[in-house]
Amino acid sequence: MSETTAPPSLEAFLEAPIAAVRAVAPPTVIYGPGGTRRQAAMAGISPESDGYAAWSREHMAESIAALAHVGVQHIVVNLLRPAQMAEVGRYRDRLLAWLAEGLAGDDALAEWCRRGWRARLIGLEQLPELRAAAERLAAATASASGPSVWWYLCPTAATPWEGILAAAQRGARSQEEAISALYGEAIPPATLYLAFGKPLIAYDIIPPLLAGELQCYWTQRPGFSLNEPTLRQILYDYAYLRRTWQPAKQERYAALSSQRELWEHGPVLGLGARVGPFWYPRGIHASSSGEN
Image (cartoon, rainbow, N blue to C red; front, side, top):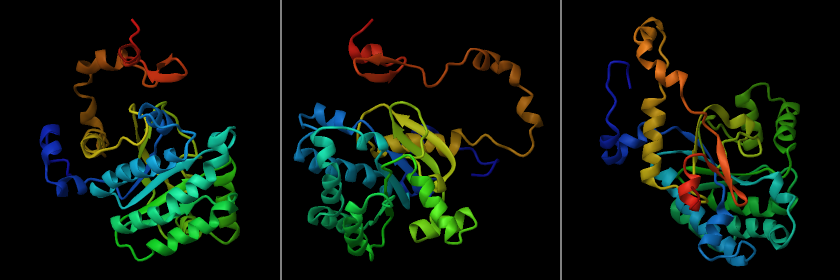
């Protein structure tokens, strides 16, 4: 969009042909779903059960499909953080087996192939248990012509840095070279980050090499809940509302006095409240919990 072209209205964008949405979608998005066990529990599925793994794959696939449909070519999905590795109980005992089956089992491979996705596991340096699954996944989807899905596994806080240092030791001297060395191909750094719950940035969710100038959005519906209407709203904000930079700054400040109330009394984004064991953004927790 040029500076002289007026953006469409939100209403028009929400109803626009999919080609108009794809025209403004970034090539790479990082997706950090959270609250998936909460979503499963609300659906009557125990997060400790094998049924949770199958349920997760089905719902994860639908969220990824929504990103693919709006035109994202590289979808980086965080699936494993250090905190999960530190848990105890059946969930932790079965976690890696669930990942192997859910990502590279027969049913999973058939689904990725049906959808036309190239699928890869990244962050395996400290997870030899999943290397066979990663090889099956890459081999089964190698000829796919659709978008690439990069499932990011980060079992320790050191994992991303160890990978970057290893790439440098192999001769990488730039971000682009390190990306190719670590992931096997060029991936454009992400400019859009979608997550859930508490606004936070962590490199066990966002691979450092794949982080560009990230525009960040945190939905407040737990789990795998992305859909096209939600993504259209986010992409409208991303493509039209947040692009305020301009090379000549003088005119920006001519009418600033009319905005004094906005910038002197604006809210603090990120404040929230505890409801039971969970955090919710301030402003939605009362109606959600029934509290006054």
